[in-house]
Amino acid sequence: MITFKCKEDIKKLDCNNTAFPIIKRLIKLLIEDYDYLGRKHDPATQGYIVLLEPGDTERNLNELQLCWSDLTAEGLSLINAAYIFATVIGTDEYGLAFVIPNSVLPKNLQQEIHDTIDI
Image (cartoon, rainbow, N blue to C red; front, side, top):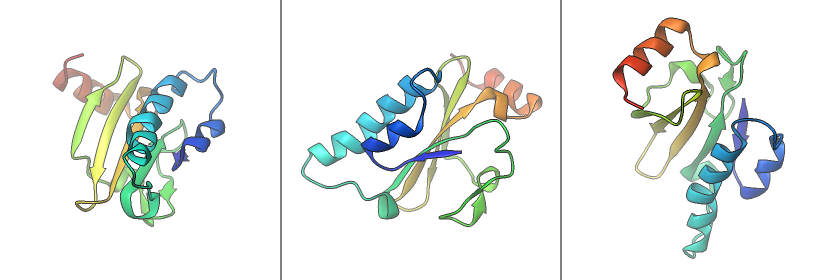
């Protein structure tokens, strides 16, 4: 699991990773553009981006003291055939943006999501 809380955090991800352009775009939309509007993004009170990785099935989000799989997503969308985007809204100010590779999800859940959401 890799968290992205500021634009410099893109350095945590290898540029050859297939999620790199997705994360880069989300950082632009959710962090950089927010800062541009004259307010500074604060990940502690407003949230951040989370990229799940294989093996993260039961890994805890330290800040929330919860396993990511115990969170309820407010919305799901397919980014492409390999990645799902999920939003978890904690309050009217705080939210998490998850980028989830299909390979992290159990096969039955992958199929259910793909059957439910049109690409």
